[in-house]
Image (cartoon, rainbow, N blue to C red; front, side):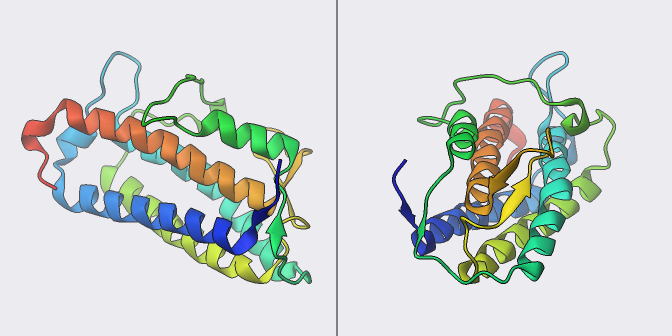
Amino acid sequence: MKPINSSELLSKLRAKSLFLLDQIENIGNHTPMELLEMNDGMGRWNTLQVLEHLNTYYRYYLPRIETLLEKSATGPNQYFKPGFLGNYFTRTMQPRNGRVANKMKAMKNHSPSPELDGRLVISEFLQWQRKLGLLIERSENVNLNKIRVPISIAPFIKLKLGDVFAFIVAHNNRHWVQIENLLERYPVTLTL
């Protein structure tokens, strides 16, 4: 894995995060709640469950990242070198050509309830998404290779901060494809 310019990486990740923030703000403001509660099959998630799933990751990762950034004494580094495991996780999450190739089952602690308060889920997601953008921006001043973040499914495994940000954004991209597919299924009532 070749080193990546740290500033360019963070800039791309922040841009993708801002895109998703804009999309979900539009959906929250202009899409009927009934549409957000519709799924595309028995046992499948609706849009609100997808957002709640993403909230579960944010609840775990963002407070930890914020604490690590506050405690960090590292200075910025010009290049980030993805780790083997972090790069693997990111690649497996990232959709290809607008499609999710490999389906995965969510871990139990990241599986959303079917009974959700839609406004609360969207509001929480938007707060976390803004926080992600700010944390990515703050990371311009630290070494993305040196700060290590424990992963949610096995906290004894720690990934480089750059890999965790790349994973979170790839995971978000994956679920954005899922949301797009859900909302395209019922386009009659969608007014973005």
